[in-house]
Image (tube, rainbow, N blue to C red; front, side):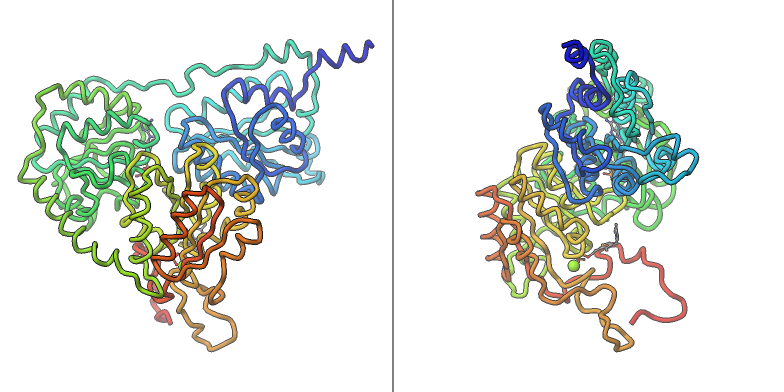
Amino acid sequence: MAAETTTQNLTDGFHLVIDALKLNDIKTIYHVPGIPVTDLGRLAQASGLRVISFRHEQNAGYAASIAGYLTQKPGVCLTVSAPGFLNGLNALAHATTNCFPMILISGSSEREIVDLQQGDYEEMDQLAVAKSLCKAAFRVLHAQDIGIGVARAIRAACSGRPGGVYLDLPAKLLGQAMDADLGAKSLVKVIDPAPAYIPAPASITRALDLLKSAKKPLIILGKGAAYAQADADIKSLVETSGIPYLPMSMAKGLLPDNHPQSASAARSTVLKEADVVMLIGARLNWLLSHGKGKTWGAPGSQKFIHIDIDPKEMDSNVEIAAPVVGDIASCVAALLKGMGNSWPKAPEAWTSVVREKANGNIAKMAPRLQNNNVPMDFHGALGALKRIVQERPDVILVNEGANTLDFARSIIDIYQPRKRLDVGTWGIMGIGMGYAVAAAVETGKPVLAVEGDSAFGFSGMEIETICRYKLPVCIVVFNNGGIYRGTDKNPTGGDDVAPTVFVKDARYDQMMAAFGGIGVYATSPDELSRAVKEAIASGKPTLVNAVIDENAGTESGRIGNLNPQSVVGKKA
Ligand code: ADP
Ligand code: TPW
Ligand code: MG
C-alpha cells in the first residue's frame, strides 16, 4: 500500500518531457525509435501526442523542419543517440539555414562514460557536435530542469530569426524520478515565444521615401514573408503600391501566381532594370546572385530596402539604403500605415513594360505545355500537373530534383500561401517524403510530390510511412533514368554505367504497390493527369511513375553555370 502511494506521487524524466511539450502546445513528434527513447515515443503516443514513426531520422528531421515552417511552432524530431542523432542533424542544420523553427531531441549515452571516452553504447559528445550546426544547443541533466530546458529550446527556435535547436537528453535523465507535484510546478509554459519586433519609425519613413522616389520599383517576396503569415497585409502592400513583385520559390502563392503584378515571367528584366528593390523576408544569397553581377543592373544603379528580423542580414552582400529591421507582420503593417490612402501607384511606364514582357513569355510557353508527347518531356508532363493544381489550389506541392525542380517551379502556378515546399536555401535532395508526410499531417490537405527519380531515391523508403499512416500523398516520379538525364555513357567502355545513370525502365510504381499503395505507370500526359486526379480525389497513397524522355534534361537544370570546369580534360 505504502509503495503504491509513493508511485502515484512520483513522476520521471519521460513524463516530464512529454508534459512539457504538451503544455507548450506541441501536437506531433517525428521519430525513429530505439535506445534510449523507445519508451519516450510510446509514452508520448499514450499521452495523446501524435507520434509519426519514420524509417530514417533524416526524413523525420526534414518533416519536423517543414512542420515548423508551416505552423510557426517548432517541429519536434526525436532520435536515438550517436548515429540516429547524426542522421537527424542534417535536417537540424537545414532548418537553421532555412530559418525554420525546429527542435531535435536526441537521447544520449551516460555522461560519465562519454566524457572519459570509455566506449559506451553509441557514445558521442552530441552536444559538442551539434553546437556549430544549429542556433542553440542545450543538455538537461536533472529531471527538475526539463521544464526549463524545453522552454529554452522553444524560445530559441521561434524568437528572432527562427532556426534549429538541439536538446540533449541523457538516458539516465529519462528514468530519473521526482515528486509529481514539484515536477508539475517545474514545467514552463512559454509566453509569447516569438515576440513582435517593432521596426523603428525612422526606418519606415526612410523606406517609404525611397520607394516613393522610384521610377522602376520591384518587390521581392521570400519564404520569410510566407513564414510570417501576414498574408493579407502583404497582398495589400503589393496591391496598394501597384509595384511588380517577384516571389522566391517558396513565396509563390502569397499572391496567386496569375496575379497581374507578378513579374515571375519577366524575372531577368526586372532584376536588371529595377531602380529600387524592396526585399521582404528574402536574403541576397546565391539564389538572387548576391544582388550584383550580370543578373543585376550596373553597380550603384539600384537601391535596396530590406525587411528582415535579423539586423546582421543588412549589407550582407550589397549596401542596403533602407534597412527595416523587425518582424515582417509589424514592418508591413507599419509600411501600410505610412502609405495611407493616397499612395501613388508605381509608374505605368514601368509596370506596363513588365506586364507585357511577362505576358509575352507566358504566351510563348503555353503551347509547349499542351503537348501530349510520348515519351513525355518536362513541359508536357508539367503542363498536365499545372492544370490539376489550377483546379485544386488547396493541394500542397512538394518539389525536388534538378530539371524536375526548375521546370516545375516556373510552370506550376501556386495560388495560396505556403503551398509550395521545396529544396530551399541549400538546394538539397532528400526533403521529399519527409516534407510530404509533415505537410499532410500538419494541414490535412492533399499533397502532390513532384520528384526527380534521383531526388526521390534519397527518401523513397518513406512511402511505407505514407502507406502506414494512410496519408493523402500522391508522388509523381519524373523518371528520366538518371541525374539530369539518363543518357550519359561510361567513356572507358567498361561495364559500369556512367555515375549519373540509373537502371533503365525502373518501376517506382511497383515499390508503392509493395506497401499497399496505388502504383501507376504513366507514359503520356493524359495518363499522368488521370492518375493524379484520381489520387487527389481519393486521398489514397499513390505513386505515379511518369516516364520522361531520358534526353530531356540539362546538366544541373538551371544552375549548370555553378559547376566548376576541368582545365585539363573536357567532360565525355
Ligand atoms: P528565400 O530563400 O525565399 O529567398 P530566405 O530564406 O533567403 O528566403 O530568407 C528568409 C529571411 O526571412 C531570413 O533572412 C529570415 O531572417 C527572415 N525572416 C524569417 N521570419 C521572419 C519574420 N517573421 N519576420 C522578419 N523576417 C523573417
Ligand atoms: C543532399 C546534388 C542536385 S540535383 C540532383 C543531385 C543528386 C538530382 C537530379 O536528378 P533528378 O532530377 O532528381 O533525377 P532531373 O529531373 O534533373 O533528372 N546530394 C544532396 N543534395 C544535392 N543537391 C545533390 C546531392 C544533386
Ligand atoms: Mg532524373
